[in-house]
Length: 113
Length: 109
Image 1 (tube, each protein chain N blue to C red):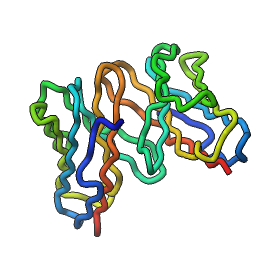
Image 2: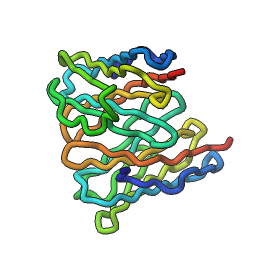
Image 3: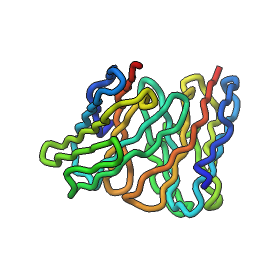
Image 4: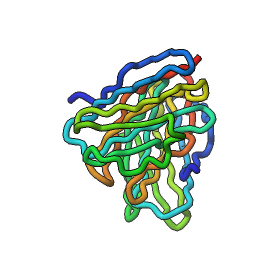
């Protein structure tokens, strides 16, 4: 079975540029999560969706961040404009139902210069 | 703020020895999960223990949960070099999973 697929794996861009991260969850999973991982702050939940609807975006750092899930098999996390402090590894995860394990993609390592 | 706090932050042992990692948390939970993360990869689910369970086994893994003390432990028996990774506990509330900062485990050959 294909796992959670994220693209790109690495992204290096200049500050001020728009960054779009992509995620394809596991088929049949109703929940999708976006996390950010840094050495200083660990793994932080940014936003999660249930049946393509955003449920909790309280972890989104500021208005520069936005996430969409236009259908059950695709989600994007966008940063516009990007800043150096956004540099981190961004993970997407999905799960079938509440109380079930989450399945993570291999992440996007984002570097903002 | 982080719900789970792992202890120790780093652990280095010889291959073949057992490794024990601990996790403490603050609020009530539905379940507690342990994940492994190899360098440069995503987190991989290891084991889930529900709030009404006290112990669970999976291969060389043994997890305990003490809800009265709000703590859990992960034991890896007969460690192997391939067990070198970071290990995270995560507490499940109503909907969200909240991760601790992790324990960095190094197995020396």
